[in-house]
Length: 392
Image (cartoon, rainbow, N blue to C red):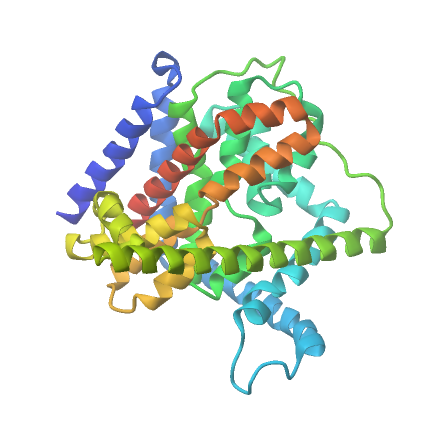
């Protein structure tokens, strides 16, 4: 029965995406079939095999060590600020982002990351049937982040037609940056983080291929990546450290604002209707949770967490998930995979602002299709969670 519901769920994602497609006649079904099979194989390997367990443990162990190193810097500056045995969220989860950002800068400076991103992107383009630029951008988004990635392709942004620009932005919203992966792993099981990262990469292409189908001519499919302006090593390091600090502070500010606002709205709804706003949204999202594989008796609770992510951000939703200790392991796994992406309303402004900073006209174009971006990225999260649910 569980497998039947998951298959129906996948079909429902395709139907909902198909109904919103720009041009249904241009949809190419063979690459879609290949990518959904690849997704299923990867989910099985990561969640049900010794090889997958080894890879996830290696990935998680690497980040455990990195976070331990990061905490040495945090403790040097903020040691003694917390009560003994306590670890405030800002210090233990957000500030380590600074160290991870510095490492990314070093890998960028030494040309290791650009090499990896470029050639993984070229391999992906053979599988997904899309352009080299789109494939490069998807991999780069998963490492550099949803706003930083556009800097590396800023030469092309002004030349891209609307449909190709949409795919680039959709990739940025469907993935998460490597600098905050460590923070996620302190809040949810690392195996769900890794699984979501991999599945979302292909899910982004699947949904974009239905919502926004097109073909790219070889003449216009030129992958010319913008080289960063040459800096000294320590100039670069200082810049990436400050970028990491800005991300940490921005996330902290968003959490303070959204958690407080949600608490206020919940209080108002509870006082007037006898039900919190999150519980109300839970009923709206419950059918989606159910087709993802969540048992019906947990669907409203799971739907509430999913809705929290969409109206606020994934950090708020992950904190909320941690409070729901009665949920089954199966449901926690599905919801966890759903939460690992930037698919929320605030991301529309972040991505449009990033593009506008490089090309004002194209930034306005992105703002106009912002809601469709969110719709597509949410479908990616639903698809990834549904596929993962088959093997949980």
